[in-house]
Amino acid sequence: MLKIENLHATIGDTEILKGLTLEVAAGEVHAIMGPNGAGKSTLSYVLGGRPGYEVTAGSVRFNGIDLLDLDPHERAAAGLFLGFQYPVEIPGVSNVQFLREALNAQRGARGEEPLSGGEFLKLAREKAGLLKLDMEMLKRQVNVGFSGGEKKRAEMVQMGILDPKFAVLDETDSGLDIDALRTVGDGINSIMRAPDKAVLLITHYQRLLDYVKPDKVHVLAKGRIVKTGGPELALQLENEGYEAVAA
Image (cartoon, rainbow, N blue to C red; front, top):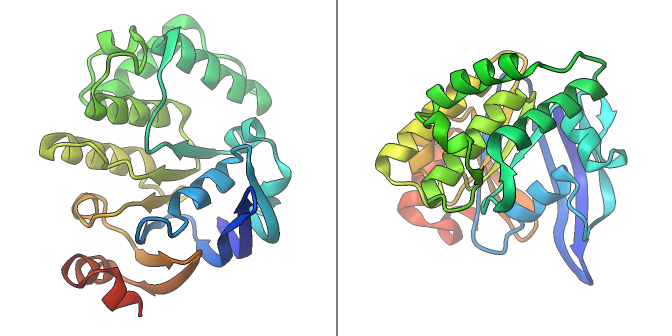
């Protein structure tokens, strides 16, 4: 589903990704772990098409198409979802308004009919229920006044409504307490565990992987994947640290 080959990317004059190669098949969940500054968030931004991140070499193919040749909104319409480490606030725009416009924009790009207000609210209630998020929260301004855990749960509701084929989740476990971590993990499983979908989880810690069991775990260090293993690799990293495992 996602095939990255020899990816190099820079921010300004600094090269961050230095020949990263990774392949994620449909139906799989892969986790990427690594020390600060390794390039984990840079990888997510490059995949999402964030301005300021320049790809200088390599390729990324998503379901057989050249992902890097698409604008960010085209990547989203093609089925890519990016979950942010720090979801932003959008004052003056309600979650319901934002999500309905986003969903119908994607449906339009795919040649599908837009959802009516009633159809959308039914869908939103269903997905909010999965994440144990009160519908009243979705009537509020996007992330304004939300706690860290509420922002992450609201973002998972967004993922559920948009129903992507591939989700890149950048430190979704950041700022979550024990109960919220379980809820978000269960939400990821219910939304994205399917034969025609895949997930790339970027995390510092093994704890999220207790709830979202990965098929593979990769260690990213100094801009490239330096080690790959099964779920046991995450436990080894937790116990021994990156330097010992990735040496």
